[in-house]
Every structure is written in structure tokens, then in C-alpha cells.
Length: 120
Image (cartoon, rainbow, N blue to C red; front, side, top):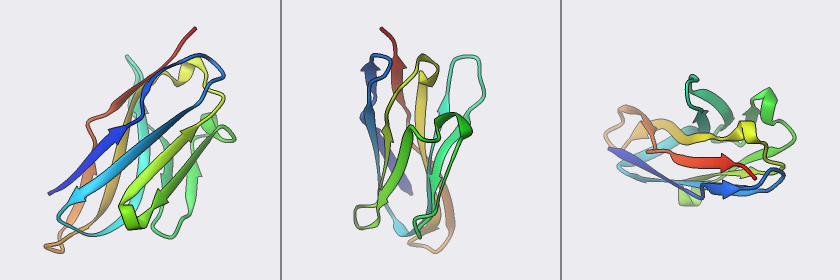
């Protein structure tokens, strides 16, 4: 079992910044890709940003230049720095990670989600 715990969400004004964190714990042998997804009310969950174990990143077009994903492999933690936030960034943000458990079976785990609200 691999657990992901997110933190850092909240209410912020347009143009503001937030930093999300997601720590993985449990029976981990390795973590391959980690990523952040979001789901706004009435919409499908979408990929915001992803990062591989080697540090390669990809971003949704809507957040390029504003959001930065990073990871600390020693801490099994992924971060999402969100700058220049817009009301349309309002959503529940979910962390995702996949890799091999200590039993060498693959896992694909999700966090419980953290609410980000951008409003004046």
C-alpha cells in the first residue's frame, strides 16, 4: 500500500501564489512518475503537470509559464508551485504517483485531494 498525502491548498486572490506538497509513504520500492491533476465542479479530472523520476516535466497548456512541478526523491515528495493564479484554476487538486511497491508489484496511487480556490 502506498499512501499520498497532499497539503497546501486554500483560498487565494487572483494573481496570488500557492505551493502544494504531496508526500508518498508506505511500502515503496520505487516511484516512477508523479503528477498533479485537478477537477473543477462539473468537469472531468485533467492533468496539470507531471514529472518523471529523471526530472522530465510536462504541463497542461493552461498552466505553462505559471506553474512549476518539482520533486524531492529523497523525501518521496512532489511539489506544485502555482503563481499568477486565476479564478479558472479553482478546483480540487489531486496528487498521483506510480511505481513499484516493496512486493515489486506496480501501484498507481491517488491522494485525497486538496481544494484550491482563487477568488477575490
